[in-house]
Image (cartoon, rainbow, N blue to C red; front, top):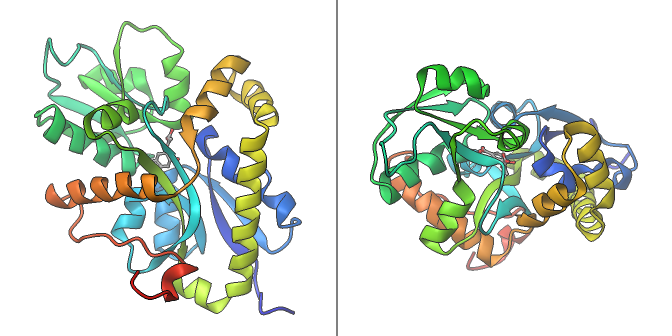
Length: 285
Ligand SMILES: C=C(O[C@@H]1C=C(C(=O)O)C=C[C@H]1O)C(=O)O
């Protein structure tokens, strides 16, 4: 044996936005050594924190809360520089006409709920009350002035015409700051990486290969998206192209500003450092 006692439990976000990271992952790990746990982001955030899974695509905000216990797998993320198309605030009235007092926020998110709070406070200079709710737009708007949805439910609602004002949080963030925004990162529990470094190296290579193959030819993902979620090829081509799966200096700069604002507003109680599992032994990092 190679020091790999148990399969690594790997959290996979159950939304189309993360497909490129995962679509070929099991092919590249040869279906050995990993168990995939498919959940919405908030569930994965909890499972990783509790050590029920060792590595996961999680909300970037969840990494920020636990940066001392986690390390990042380099070059992997879900983000956008501009429109994200699936992190949407649906409002009954445009903000210029009437300020929302109560906003229902999906229980599935961590990054976007806090991004909304940052944008409301600092960009729109508004202070609504936020109430967590199951991601069901019609029910949310029975009692709220606006509702935040993410992922596939946001995509489905963006195809309906309910006479609502729709705000794309990735677009507002980019117009305001000029920067990219990163919604999810791939994080591992530090002690798990230390216990089985070879298993993580294999997993990291498989993630990178899955991402490159997915982005290199979107056709299979577009086909799957149409079968599972509807829409047409042009929509999905646009959707996967607006998203970005790298985590280079540009993405890190945007996320660092997000974390700074989150700390300023008391959404995080400490400053966040980005630790990468491979580079962390290098000096001056
Ligand atoms: C792009 C998206 O980003 C997701 C948003 C998340 C959050 O708000 O916590 C978490 C994971 C991301 O995959 C989306 O939901 O559509």
